[in-house]
Image (cartoon, rainbow, N blue to C red; front, side, top):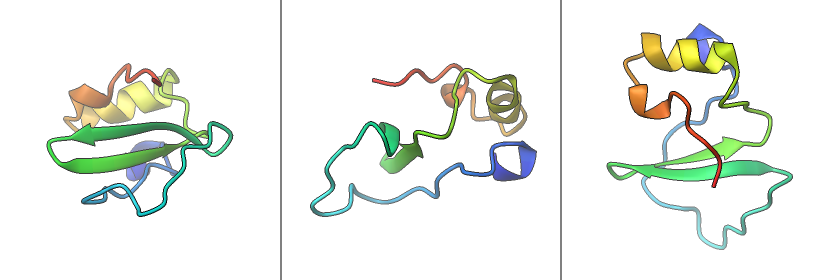
Length: 69
């Protein structure tokens, strides 16, 4: 994803960091996909063409159109 136009795409984590408090100004979404925790920075626009294209090219279709909760 980072190499294909989404430079701030997060590294996956194995769990939510201890003491983590969601802050909408900092994080758009927390996703648990098959045990990989992704903390999406608020600066990532999951509806942008670059994001959708990168998700498709990377075979990460589950990320395409990923909407914030």
